[in-house]
Amino acid sequence: APERDAADAAFTFACIVLILFMQLGFAVLESGCVRTTNMANAFLKNTVDLAVSVLGFYAVGYGFARGDSLGGIIGKNHFLLMQHTDKLDFLHLAAFASTGATIVSGSCSERVNLLPYMGLAIVVSTVIFPICCHWAWHPDGFLKQAGFVDLAGATVVHVLGGSSAFAAVLFIGPRLGWHGKLVPPQYACVQHTLQLSHKAFGGENINSLVGAVILLFGWLAFNASSTAKIHIDNAQAVGHVAFITLVAGSTGLITVVLHNAAFERYISVLQAGSGLLAGLVSVTASAHVIEAYEAIPIAICTSLCALKAATICRSYRIDDPIGVLPVHLVGGALASLVPALFGHEICHINFPDGAHLGLLYKGTGEALSIQLVGIFTIGLFSGSVTYVYLLFVTFICKVRFRVSPINEILGIDVMTHGIDSYNRVKVLDELQEILRTMRSQGEFGSHIRQTTSLAENFHTNTVTVRQTMPSRHRVAPLNPIPKKDAFSGIGPPLVNNPKSAAVSVGPTSNLEIALPFGTKPAPRSPVDLFGSIVESKQHSPGGESFNNRSGRNVGMPSNMSVIEEANRET
Image 1 (cartoon, rainbow, N blue to C red):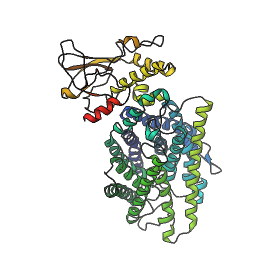
Image 2 (image 1 turned 120 degrees about the horizontal axis):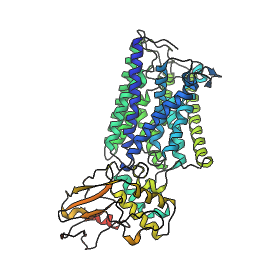
Image 3 (image 1 turned 120 degrees about the vertical axis):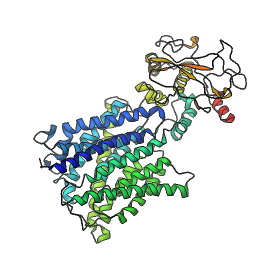
Image 4 (image 1 turned 90 degrees about the horizontal axis):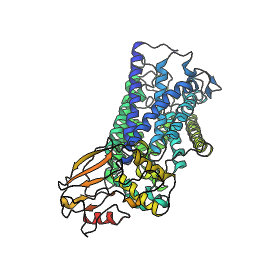
């Protein structure tokens, strides 16, 4: 293994920590782009990405990436780090592998089963990334031998991750209720409600910008650590690469903000974060061979192209919740071309591998053709292997990669993880309404057993919530299913079950709600798309009646009439 001095080891380790910290940035970013009923799942998926990437890369991935080359295609030794002692090099590449894997997570948010997704993360981090890494970064890799330039992974990480995400998105399709995607007939009663939920409960948008800023910190280490070992001869290279990275990211952010101010109705927080990331991606392949005055127009073009690509994706109903395809696939492909167009020797910096002249500096078209070959080879390989894995899991292993419709409608957090991070008691309202509707239609499939079992297994605690809204804007409480509607022969009923949700209203105007264990109730908004706006008439000492203006008792809405009434009142 190559020797490292103390300064180089300290620098590399600090960069590794910051790159691993990017996993938190990706998780926060994704949580800000999904419905609040799926935020915990987003965090868990990104954490799982890191765990399986490290283990898989240790087992076989590092050998494929750094082992002695077999025809310039794949490594053949160093599996389990045998006969190799440079653990920092392993950690550095493992952090890159986990980043490539977690890019896929955001594109298929809110609709994938965790275990099959773990398998995809393993495939990306232990097969796809290591082989592509060998091609582009191993001294004997066929792309490296041909003169392919990619400083920190514009192609090897971003195009790779974007191509894999594209294959996954095409395979699983859009989310239910998103841009007219219809739910199955047995859930038709919540079609409109689900469409509204994608708009009204689309996540904590501020999280997306916070996640992008966290990624900015990691990106500085991501690019700077790729300048090879830090020593006296290339110490300036680290500062130059970090400087170019920060300038490009800032330019991308400002470009999108100004574009929205000029041409849109509002300045989108989500798009501002995407502009920052597109700017960072734009110089990931070339930060060591361009100057700041070149990085600025490059970042402007890349961020604007990412905006246009996002519009095209929506027009073709390609459901990409966090913008993986515009930022990583399109942005990464454009960034990979920059060395062949703008690349030149930075006179005051010594680069171990030198620099290739771009076309604008009297270079030849050969460099451009090599970059194009690298983009298409890595993109096609990544997308193809991903699609083959999804076909294998779905049709050979008979495992659902996508969650069931009931899980997707009610939220993966509740249905898979048994938590309700943002106190969406409305989820249980919807659950009861769906069960009523499906019972009336004679639907008694396995999904019924699944949902009733969920309600049965919830550990609940009783909490008291004082109403803070004016009496005329109180929300109808959760109505238990009447005893006569209980399902016989399909597990314990939801009604009159101490583990099911219930509400009692007393003369003190307090709501006593039995919620899943660990949840904290929050004040209900006067406008709740999953409830209804009602006004209280009067509370007798034993009274439990809420009524709306028409005098009707209000229970769970069976259609959108109550919601429309709520909107009119508001």
